[in-house]
Length: 471
Image (tube, rainbow, N blue to C red; front, side, top):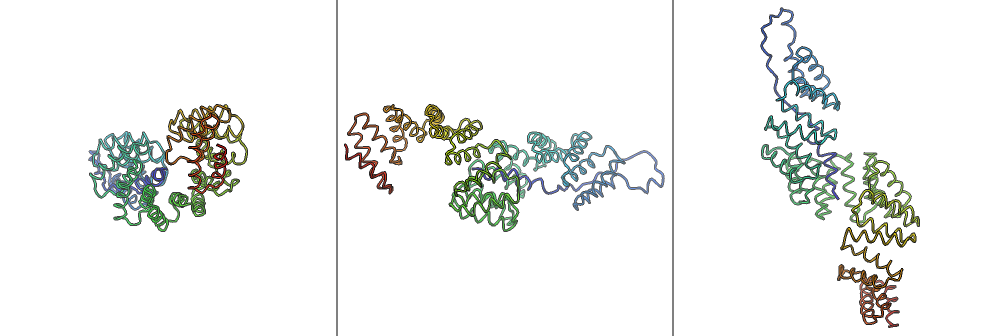
């Protein structure tokens, strides 16, 4: 379960691109040989409008800054830096198409303007154009190696592509260039998490928190890493602390629900998912997980409603089809279950578990041949899948192919060894009876009886003893 990947997409990037960049320079007025009249000399020059725009930008008055940059550009249409700053102002206001247009113009006027490429990379990343963002970040860094933020975007794109090694390399290079770049530590923490190096992830998030003790993204990231390490108390503390700082973080509630669910605290887990959905009404995975938890509570109507909503938002969720199929099977709607499992398999064709589960649904519906085909496929995909062998053995036993049933039960026992379910020993004992191997049957049934006693399964023990008395 990759909790942090969602955080990276929705929160981590905000830490980099959300704050306005500050570029504290102004261009010198180019020399001109043209004479000006006294009235013209009294008018502000394009550089003065530009400088005023920069001051307004840095004061976060972006609308007024745009007006100033408009005047600078009107007076000097080839003013690349004014286009770049106006684009940054549009970006800060969320007007991304206008921002891209201005960055394009700035780059066309001055192809060496590395900062404009970086700003355009930021917008492309926000728009989900990862490869364009990567291309611009690489150009920015080639033109101006001091632009450490370009490395962050290169790392972000690599992280999004699942290339955690490259991402860590880029974030580390950014740190080496600017050891005070906390965003690089933060993002490297997520990259370590993706690589399942949770100890290193915790170290990076802790480094950030030691310097910014109210950085909610670091708390969320560290909480996720603690969860993966099985440190549930620490995970809950970090996510709860993030919510104390800002109680409108849907992903913090979402992540904390995993902790509660793992402790079988289903009520608090569902409460957190309720809040996450209230804050983010189209939160697909929150609907998915709430549906699965509601099913565990036995509230199947509400569970199906949530799973349907998740699939409305994203029809490509195999987990939602699987969850709904399990509910349908419990309701005795085997054909509907088969249909949902088939949808899930179409999305995850390499999942041995899904084939095994669909085989169970076929078997419940009386379609033995289809069940056997699915169990065979599950075993082909996962040759050590003990549950698939056990299910296939039951089919063989039911159709009278006792030798194959015995062979499959024997494979399950060899795979699970000391952890084997006593039911498997019991059933192999019965196949041995049918094969005429009384001594082997007694050995299996005696071991099954011992394990039933050890695990407190009285009914299984009594039934096994009945067969032992008959031998």
